[in-house]
Image 1 (cartoon, rainbow, N blue to C red):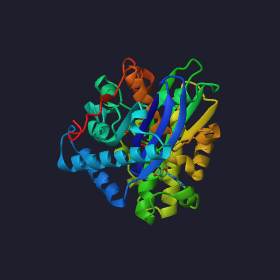
Image 2: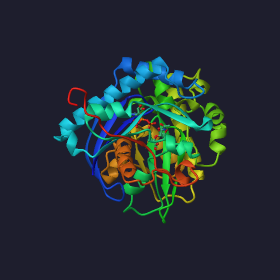
Image 3: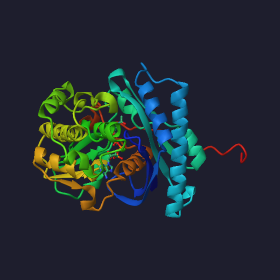
Image 4: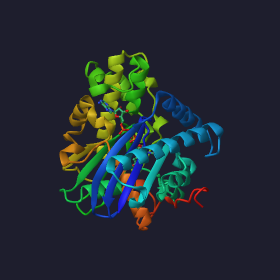
Length: 368
Ligand SMILES: Nc1ncnc2c1ncn2[C@@H]1O[C@H](COP(=O)(O)OP(=O)(O)OP(=O)(O)O)[C@@H](O)[C@H]1O
Ligand SMILES: CC(=O)N[C@H]1[C@@H]2OC[C@@H](O2)[C@@H](O)[C@@H]1O[C@H](C)C(=O)O
């Protein structure tokens, strides 16, 4: 099948749109990819909606969050249209879209996770069957609702020697470990770039620490690093997941811009080392996808603390910027086929679970 996957990640940098050909099982081939950036105004609107949503006891139709949801849907429609144009394809040639939406609050402890974006509106506007709300069924069944990528990581690495680990360095980081027998262990490890981005934006106005240059020029403050690592999340057994806002840059306040960047980068690396202690067996290789693989200072620190060289996804011919979006395309095909997308080892759900809500495009009123 030809499937489009759409992801708007915790970094709020934009929409990733990927087109893949897959059977939702072992076969998967990347066909096209493009990103659609948010304007500064859109990012600010999404950040506000996210901050607000996190204060709610449960998801509700608040006007500000609904306006953000509308922005998300419209930007995703645009991303699909541009991706189709790039690929020279028409909507009827695409079997399904996997639409992750934007997480505004992730509270499995309260029994919910909230991704905004209207799946039916996206299906109607693109004319393509759309699977949305991919995390809720898992949470309803008692899982963490995240991470979901492990099933795709397993397909991507099917021919590689195991055990193997795949690290996704987005705003938040998550690791997937795949054992020799195909067993999956996966969980969020801590912030990846989220804190570094917030720090750098506050200190310098830049969106992120390009090339890890600021962190490379600073000194890690060991006392701040120790204080940050003294957090109950790291002692928790897997599976476990995070909301983007579960950690803050507060402990680094008072450090110079460079030392703060170095310390927060070291924090991410140290949390990945902590995560490795929870893996059943040391992986032979550590593959890295997500924006953090563009940060050599972060990769160096991970290598030092974990004792394994992180290999950017490109080493295997993957596009590490597209992996998440591809994963949601893959999951949408699995949803169509009634196959599970989450497992006891990945989200803690008691039994393997299907997920996602399917929306068939409705003919427009004018055409009806
Ligand atoms: N050249 C670069 N140098 C340093 N860091 C970079 C570079 N390019 C991207 N990044 C980092 O990658 C981040 C974006 O990563 P990505 O797109 O994988 O996150 P996301 O998908 O929004 O997050 P999540 O996976 O948590 O949902 C940026 O915010 C930035 O911190
Ligand atoms: C609730 C939510 O949106 N979580 C994201 C976030 O970003 C990274 C990490 O935290 C991961 O758990 C998840 O996304 C990836 C794509 C996943 O589900 O595998």
